[in-house]
Amino acid sequence: MKKQTVIVTGASSGIGKEITKHFLDRGDNVVINSFTAGKLKQVYDEFGGGENLAMLAGDISKKETGERLVATALKQFGSVDILINNAGIFDTRPFLEVTPEYLDSFLNTNLKGTYFTTQAVIPQMLKQQDGVVINMGTPIVNHAFGGAPATAPLTSKGAIHALTLQLAAEFGTSNIRVNTIAPGVIRTPMHGDAADKSAGLHLLNRVGEVEDVAEMVYTVAKSRFISGAIIHVDGGMSAGHNLNG
Ligand SMILES: NC(=O)c1ccc[n+]([C@@H]2O[C@H](COP(=O)([O-])OP(=O)(O)OC[C@H]3O[C@@H](n4cnc5c(N)ncnc54)[C@H](OP(=O)(O)O)[C@@H]3O)[C@@H](O)[C@H]2O)c1
Image 1 (cartoon, rainbow, N blue to C red):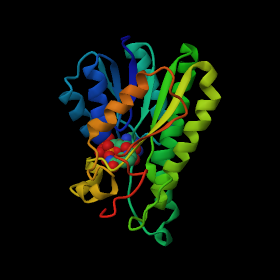
Image 2: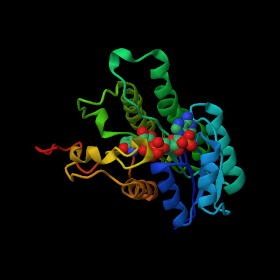
Image 3: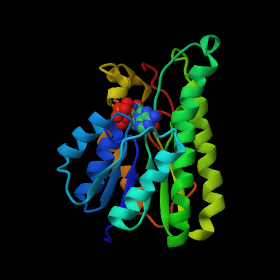
Image 4: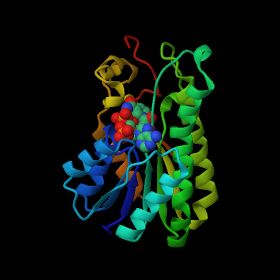
């Protein structure tokens, strides 16, 4: 398979780290990003800091970070074939306690991070007449549950689902595919030690592992005919309920 260049945001932890490993293990070039420079360098070193890997720390909500990621990819590897908009934050707060600043933190990192990093890569993908953008969504934008007040992160993720379909429509004729992966609850540092408490939300009665998501991201990235899709990797979370869940 042709060696490709992948940008992975939020690669210092959890799902993004495993996605990076998946592409590196299969021979692709990866440019990794995250917010905290020290954490990113640690992952860069853990993966051997070889010639297939480049890193750029920076706040993904800033448009310049996406532009600098593209410049790094082009300088080091000569193309941008796959963008994984994985960086994201989650938290719960009752709706009536949400402040403008709190809501902005989710709109900035989750939505604007995805929006403007994609805006930075599309010109190069247009030149190539080839490219894939994969966003990170969630099934709970269409399947709410009580007990976890999450209007702020969920409205930012819902917008990512909408963005995915519209971009797939705007750039499909240039052979640029845009998709969203919507994971169930995945065991990552985002959930601390609490992930397993959510096992019953999934028909499989377990939470997901980072490998479950990374292998789907890789498959969608390498496919030639999947576009505008919202793909649930959620152990059946959005399909139904366990009576004992
Ligand atoms: N885990 C789940 O159950 C689950 C379910 C559905 C969707 N998702 C989505 O999957 C993605 C990854 O989640 P995860 O569970 O792997 O989270 P995680 O372990 O908390 O990792 C989040 C990553 O995002 C980075 N990040 C946060 N804010 C950033 C910013 N402003 N600029 C650049 N990077 C930033 C973090 O960087 P630093 O730590 O280096 O600062 C870290 O690398 C997120 O978009 C999340 O919403 C997760």
